[in-house]
Amino acid sequence: MTHRYERVIDVRALARVEGEGAMHVRVRDGAVDDVRLEIYEPPRFFEAFLRGRQHTEPPDITARICGICPVAYQMSACAAIEDACRVTVSPGVAALRRLIYCGEWIESHTLHIYLLHAPDFLGYGSALALAKDRRDLVERGLALKQAGNDLIELIGGRAIHPINVRVGGFYRVPAPRELAPLRERLRAALDQALDTVRWVAGFDFPEFHHDHEMLALCTPGTYPIETGFVTTTGGLSFDVAQFEQHIIEEQVPHSTALHAHLAGRGRYLTGPAARYTLNRHWLTPLAREAAAAAGLGEECRNPYRSIVVRAVETVYAVEEAIRLIDAYEPPPSPAVPVPARAGTGRGATEAPRGTLFHRYDLDPDGRITAARIVPPTSQNQAAIEDDLARFVAGRLDLDDERLTTQCEQAIRNYDPCISCATHFLDLHVERS
Image (cartoon, rainbow, N blue to C red; front, side, top):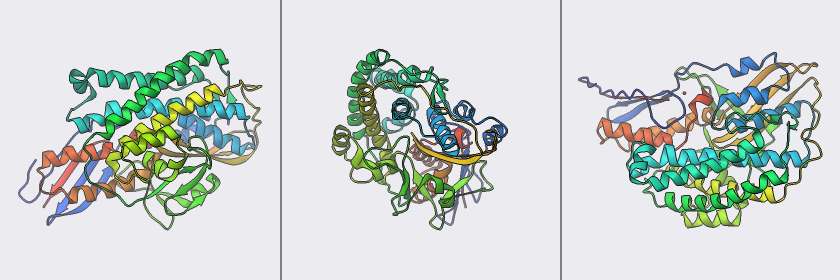
């Protein structure tokens, strides 16, 4: 609605993001005065649910935090509990964990590319609208996503909220003959993933760049997925055990999700662009070739091009899954024992949307006395708000309807999982 001295745009729900929330933009005297990413969904209390539960339970409980990236929550939980109990899993179990995580990268990235993000670049309001004109494109995306889902289902017992993951390993590991048909399916998925890179590389990307410090896990010799040192583009590198010394969370009045910043350094960004910028040299030759052909340089600081990075990472995940299947030998035991003990454990893995940290405090009987979960979207909120402030400042000449649409599109660049952080979007623009 429009007032005499100010203009307010109210969008009650942002489509094609995970969750619900609001964005408030205030413009005074022709300049952006305030931008707030308002996550208003009630807290989900998973950290409280975990208190008093046994140390074996977090993989099953935290998987319910997200239906798109449950494996990430299971893997960070397992890493943290095993750290607290001073247990190291066998190489075979570790390889199988990386394999199921590849499935999650494939299905999550493809969902965002085809169903949530690509319609913005092509002028469609949804993937369904896109399918009316380009059914072949949407079917390609669904087929690629299905390959990831199939991988998770085979190893995890089901595609959504897997049930075969446990602290110390798995309840059951597949036989090589069970993986063989999936390998053939992934060969076809690799062609679909390469076609996806070429497709999204041709989109029209606005000229917009950020200067955030970027953060991701780094593992010398391999592209990070399930392990690594926390590293930033500003030269900071520390063990996951020091995560809480460097990552400071704080409550802000306008959000039910915490905001995170680097101690003494400020806002930062995690996610595919950060992973690529810090680890691009560990991509496979084919993925690096696809990235170069798509116009990605040594770093990616244009958030609109994050869709290209996701496509490149999908190529990598498919190739890595094939490599792991080819090298697969069932471990001697599906899991190593994880006896209860008192201690504090920390674990971090690379969820599709960025670094995901877990910490658990255990008593001598293995009961959880405290839990802490830091999802990627919480870490990115300050950076998203800063980007939106600069984005709006450069587009104040647009009418409210056009500006609202472009703000929503800008937010989708980050693939925010508000339901993980705790949901998204009413947009208010005040001009006075």
